[in-house]
Length: 199
Image (cartoon, rainbow, N blue to C red; front, top):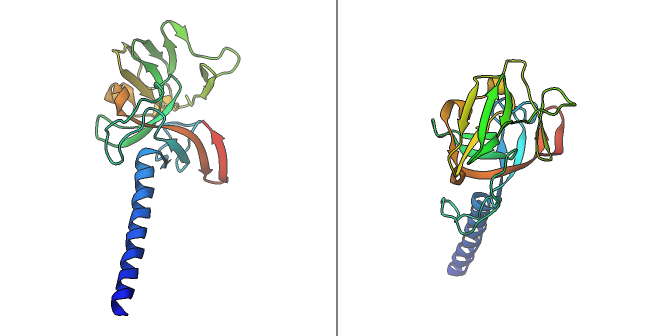
């Protein structure tokens, strides 16, 4: 009788372990959430925002590794992404403003890509990335000016709070393969509770 109980417990533990492993693998490779630590992406994201991220967006990876199993979408201008800072390895969330081959100019916190201003002429402090609008926060200035032609397969990640963002102007460009996930939307915001704000 004692042996049967022990075997039943072992089976339960095995099932629980497999379930837990499956959940962790899914979080590693498929979808997860991210808590925004700073105000560098205001007015898009605020400190404490909880964001759903899609880890399959730019290619499926083997769980707990950086080994890619298949291609995903290309990273696009305007995408809000998760990556590790090349400076100190801190996990960051920023907007991709330029991709390989782009000539980027940033003056007073405002962007020009390949000679075209991203400012939306009808709305102050807004930039247009295709169909995506980014509402900038410039009350602390625009941060350092920047100009460069991006090499192939590199990205420039910048915060929407241009004068209060430690971003690619400080730590440099990131590689396309360095991006972990695309942010899909805010599901929780302090003071509002559970919400859904697509990004």
